[in-house]
Image 1: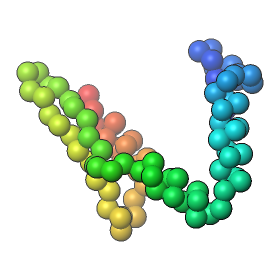
Image 2 (image 1 turned 180 degrees about the vertical axis):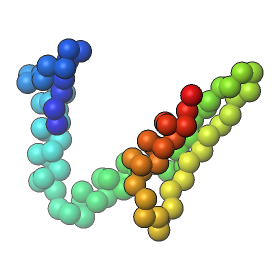
Image 3 (image 1 turned 120 degrees about the horizontal axis):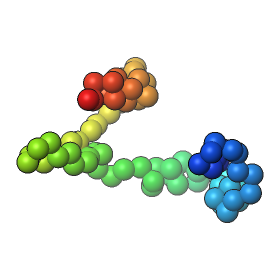
Length: 85
């Protein structure tokens, strides 16, 4: 992981970097099954959603993912951002 300041200079000493190193080391000490369980527990329990106000109307946007899909999430996000004006 790399961390940059507001001028895009790489920050080499920061508590966040120390915490990430510790987290990676902790994960490395676990078995594959234990790591899998940790990541499974971190997954969203319900579909992602957020609110979007357009004028005086508030929309609730929910998302879901096709488990059999072949597209990349980043491609979808980029496509959606290109449409937004």
